[in-house]
Image 1 (cartoon, rainbow, N blue to C red):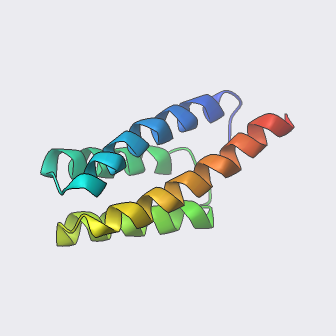
Image 2 (tube, one colour):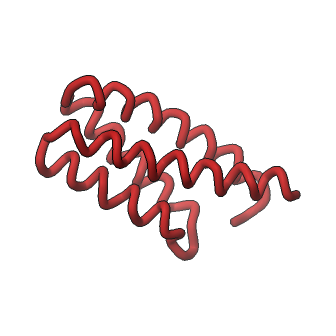
Length: 93
């Protein structure tokens, strides 16, 4: 990752977290589409996909495909793990 991208990734993950929290309460197409867009944006930051990102992407895809808000909790877990990994990289710099 290029220097300075960590903060943008963390900002995108924070925005995604808010969308996923809303989706945990109930399915909403605007929130689901926004979550999907955030995941697409995150994909642009990685040359290779970390395991947590791949799992996040799959969970959000299932969420959108099934319109089932129960997948939001799983997606949030993966997003939180990715956030921890990125934060650890920031802290290690």
